Length: 205
Image (cartoon, rainbow, N blue to C red; front, side, top):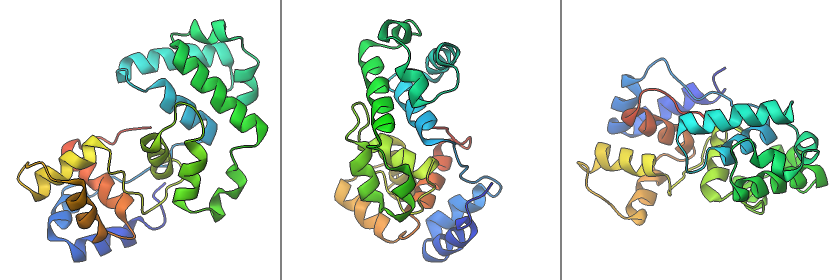
């Protein structure tokens, strides 16, 4: 289902920015889609770090078969060698166990997130080993559907801006930030369309 703000954001971006208007018009029937339960989504993000989509899917399938329903309690009930046997590295095994422990201990405050700002949620998530700012930002966009996230470290966003606005020239973070100011409070939507300008098929996190 389409986020309730999507059409409003599209219209605002198109009014303000002719380049963005062209990108939006080129992708009329696609939109950001909610990606599911928080622990499931974050675990999957860790599994997929630094490996191909195909390899990540294979590891994920084995992990789901090992754990059953993907809950913190089920992950913590498995011994570390069992998790590693699914194809996880030692480090990713630690990360997933740490994530599960954070959820189980109540250090991740899912129930408070609706009242929390983006930066507060990012600060909470990066306390988990293996979750950096980029993963937290992807989570805000794809799971929480936050409308104004601007993931400056994302290579796809950088490339999309360089291609659409600067003839492929590399530009500074300061320039990227300044351009993004014009898209507030819909920078997630602008980012998503810039991704589409590079790859029409939406990615999943």
